Image (cartoon, rainbow, N blue to C red):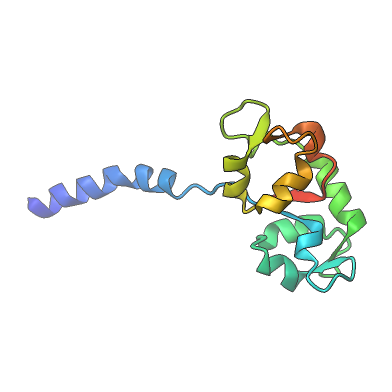
Length: 132
């Protein structure tokens, strides 16, 4: 009987465990992923940045295991909204939200063009960031 109780408790916890493991969106700039500065992000460079293979394949339209600036720009055009990373839904990215993405303070300052402590949608679009 105790085993059955433990089994029921474990089964009840499964949805909570799944929610706890939900992933926070990630982002990286094309330039930061391009470690050797050849204007191409290789599969290895993308993996080191934490980009999932499925996202890499989606961006790499020609399937040559490299992401060019043009391919990254096309992907950004389809996925340019900050909504996925704006966790408090105030239509801007705070330093705390940016930090969760892995953005450095220097990168935040570059995008925060008006130095108000937030990145707006229009400021975000001036960067070369890819969200996954």
